[in-house]
Image (tube, rainbow, N blue to C red):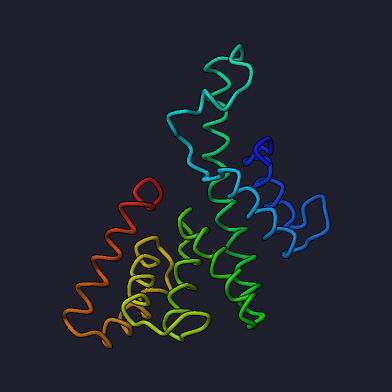
Length: 187
């Protein structure tokens, strides 16, 4: 497994999720996304040890620059594909599918998908696959709204109305922590 190339696995998973050049298969895409993540995929366009990713350093910084550009361009596609597959799994409704869907939506959210954040808020609001939690729902809806997902704003207002001052403060702290950790380069 260590020899598997995580960016290639992820790109193939995106293609399988979309049915581009291969048969569309969400279960296979989810499996490929998991393998890519286990191999170290994070779709971060700039990371310090990128030069060490190459077996043959003779290619030099031109190749490193090309790889950075490729990963930056791949980030939105990856987020969209992971969100689509996650949403399909959520729709199945059984416990295993909900867990897989939530995992993929969380991954898509870390890549900047406002729709994935919105769907995570819906799961927290409705208690689907997780315990109902108004603070977490407010956090996800706030993040989705800040990333420009229009449907999230009205849900954020509704969720905020169900929180007391302490709950609102905790939810805003969680959102700020998430934003610093994952969304600074994205939204």
